[in-house]
Length: 216
Image 1 (cartoon, one colour):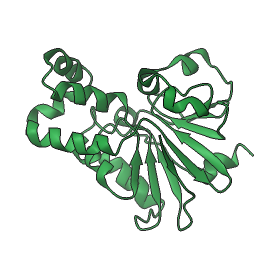
Image 2 (cartoon, one colour):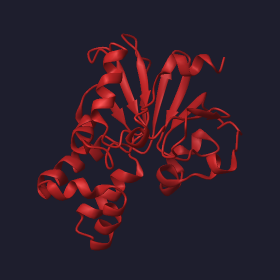
Image 3 (tube, helix red, strand yellow):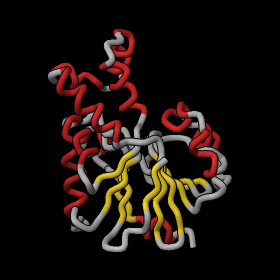
Image 4 (tube, one colour):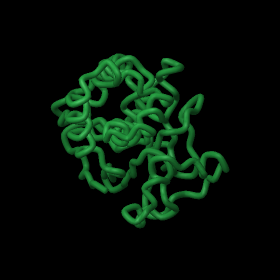
């Protein structure tokens, strides 16, 4: 896990699963007058697949103002580009077809560089409060995040499927994606912000202080 101190100079935003929807993201950032010199953007992962500009979204991981975590689609791509035939077939079934038109060596280098900047989890200080960030399923206690099953962190859906609203202990809020919902949904202190941008045209962007204001 990577920890971030409070942004003393600008704002922090969280964005849902991008899935190649680069232009949607750029429009949203323009609408909030996002300043790359001061503001920070935190992503729940799944930058690639399904949408039209996966490579551009993956390259965002290298930007100094962009802070993502790895999602299951980044891991599908990693396994496929490791020359595993079964993994490549699985990736294609899950939206990885765009990669067939890419130079595989170049794409592999970009993915490797991106993954170095996409940990499994992040923790962001916002004043005296803290927000956890990961792709899918948080542990019951945030203090155990580094010891959690990584498969659950990127693939898990138990909490959302069960409607479990038990707050995650040891953290003020947690932001996740992975499961497409009609609108942003909160269970306990876990905020689900994947609204299926590639299918609905509705990408969710929320400012950190706005997210916390509803939890006072």
